[in-house]
Length: 504
Image (tube, rainbow, N blue to C red):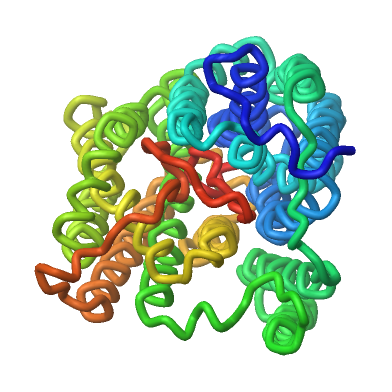
């Protein structure tokens, strides 16, 4: 295979358009899958006679492998060929999707979802890396802008398509990935040069990836089993999580090419903004997990209606994220990263009041709009600040770390919130049990957003007029599409799937 050739494709050319189309379809599958799976959870639970834990693992098994391996997937692309790893990831994702669609029971579905997450970890960073490596520098900004915008369109269309597919069968939520994957592979093989990074040397941090997965997996299992009491199994799982976490830190401090360079966290701004990411995306994942259950089980929404209910939030993100990014450049990140989470917290508190019988216009829409306004205010400045806090040669790994933090936050939130709210077993099918648990979970989510706002208000410096944060070219926010321009060639971005992390 050629190495770092074909880096001058013009966007207006057939090969340039074909490459961008492959990248958009690849990332779009992950976005679409996340959106529709959340909407499908109640239907999956009824059809497979699955309890709440099975629904949690349907989300978390995918998120666990994706969060653990997404940085490794970017590194593999740099070394083995970005197109090659991307195509392997797409095929892997499609085969796992087929197993999901054919799953005879909840155990099969959860196992297939874990395998699906591995495929997503291979294809997600490669979708943007191919554009960065192969499109002519003069066109790279527009190409990445198209990637972000069209990816956002997939996220917006997901609830509508998901509701329509679920009306036939929830299995089509996964089966739809197979023809999309076939087109994606054909386009990538036809139009995408297989580029590599000649400076990407040294051993892969496989031990770091394994230890990170052990820590996240043990913590997730312990949190989900905690409602049954502090049993030896829970204690053992917590011990495994602690040992894995400690081993991960030790490994990253000593590895010659660490997956997560801990030196990044010596920068105060980088640390503060990642703490906000942890709090905000835990709240986001908790909200989305519980809201679709409450809308369908307690308020009687169809899957399609539940999916469409949150579209105003996504519309605000798509329409105004770039403007908020520009505002953040002018005034610095401290104000938007304080006001944004607070607005989102107010929206979540509003939604926490939803009761059976409430209407959409008075009960749901105001909270969705407030939450969307908060996310729109926060998301673009958040990622721009993460990128600006590190040296130019580390923007790729900084983006990957921030994405991994967001996905891990969602993983742990979906594991912990049902237990804290007192919901277990088949209780999610009973409005009398679900509604108080929903209220508790969303109140906690609002509190997490408020804590994130406080962290930024206290931890971020107040910029002087001459110290306004400048954006790093190509920085795109975790979990939301914005206009973007080219990143440097040697990066391993783990682009958010233009979907809220850990949705599926």
